[in-house]
Amino acid sequence: MEIAFDKAFYEIAVLVLLGALLGLAGLVARQPLVVAFIAAGVLAGPDALGLVASEDFIQTLSQFSIAVLLFLVGLKLDLTLVKSLGRVAVATGLGQVGFTALFGFLICLALGIDWVPALYIAVALTFSSTIIIVKLLSDKREIEALHGKIALGFLIVQDIFVVVAMVALSAIGMGAAGGGSGAEFLRLIGGAAAMLAFVALFIRYLATPLLGLVARSPELLVIFSVGWAAGLAAAGDAIGFGKELGGLLAGVSLASTPYREAIGSRLASLRDFLLLFFFLALGAALDLSTLGAQVGPAIVLSLFVLIGNPLIVMAIMGYLGYRKRTGFLAGLTVAQISEFSLIFMGLGIAIGHVNDEALGLVTLVGLVTIALSVYMITWSHQIYDVLEPALGIFERRRPTREDAATEDATRHDFVIFGLGAYGLRIARGLRESGHSVLGVDFDPAALATWRAEGFEGRFGDATDPEYVAHLPLSGTRAVISAVPRSGGPLTAADPQLTLLHGLASAGYTGTVALSVTDAANVPEGPDYAGVIWLTPFDDAASFAVERLTGAAELPKAG
Image (cartoon, rainbow, N blue to C red):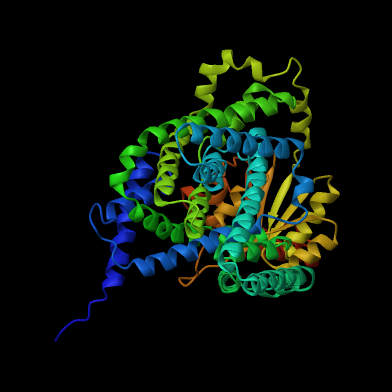
């Protein structure tokens, strides 16, 4: 009996295992997965082990990953976002983009690169990796620090610039696809206008009510989001302006809804998995025989990114009145290029403006800058201590703006997960005692009731550690879970333990109070040390007995 051999399946299995092994090695070396995945692609490529044979299948997964990635970028671009960014984020973001693009272009010309690929490379050098920066700042527990907030602000400005660059390239691609045919070009323009009109109407009338219905099921929310991203990416490709812009519009269409944070956090793991295939395909496509001649230019451009980008950020922030320490720590976050840089170069190749050598050069710059910037950000405080005497030129005599900026952060005395009847009553009592309360729930109806009572609320999930890590927990006295702990062998996840792990990963050291339906269900173990356990049914029953009998408080179970 002959056994059928699915070559593509075994090939994908080997590639995923190879990516996991190199990812583990990168983890030991404190490197992000981007570097490990590209290395896996190079190792699996035709110039090394020759493992990549099912190129069409891998390319399909690669394109799908780009659509999901750009969907998540679009998801952050709320139409009202620019107004709320603040002067420092806009000034620093635009200044860094302009500086890097201009001087990067001049450096490329000096290196003998033709002006068209030089322009592409210069623009590619302006993008910093949001994924890497957020991960490193989260690991260092500096997301809520002043320099962390500023860094996230100008990363959003960069994302907006990514959108503009992608739209510009798509327009160029549409013109090229027209091939000089006026009728074909008008068809592309008409299709693009129709899709933009559809997205605008969807945002205006359907997005929020539709997501409110879908969000009743967390699983359906994920499936709908992926389907929506893939659907609009396919529509964009069918019209002629590419999957990338279609995926981006899919994200923008949901960005104004209150569910965007939940969607983004739940798709993060899927994004990371799919990006494996993008970087595998990228690494496998590199011609190692041509990379040797690009080492010199790659070193020059890498030094420009590693040194020039932080300098311009420090200069702008110093001019705006921030201290040199804040400017330095924020500046180090842009000392690398992004996965979007590689996607941008790939679009240039698809249009025919650049060749594989330009992509290889940007890939080398990406590997060098990402690898080194990880250590620069990880050891940022130690590096600052060494360089501090020479950084005085980046600080005004009176950097008063920083003092004012630190007063703008919103703090809550208590954060409550689970906004049902029990959580709502706890919040009412805390508010009557003069405390501020932030509520988090995954139920749109409960969240609407919560907000109707005047509380600040967010759409999120206690079992999502990535979401918990982004909450404003600095200065919070206690985090309370009013989500009952459900027992049983078929329980998918213990929400209480998951929340505890998420809080620990976020660096939260305050009080944690968790609720259970019965005191007998209180778990034991080191993970729950120091937790305050709330037993609403036992407490209510004891109070009811006391009211009915007039007796002293009965001893509680357990």
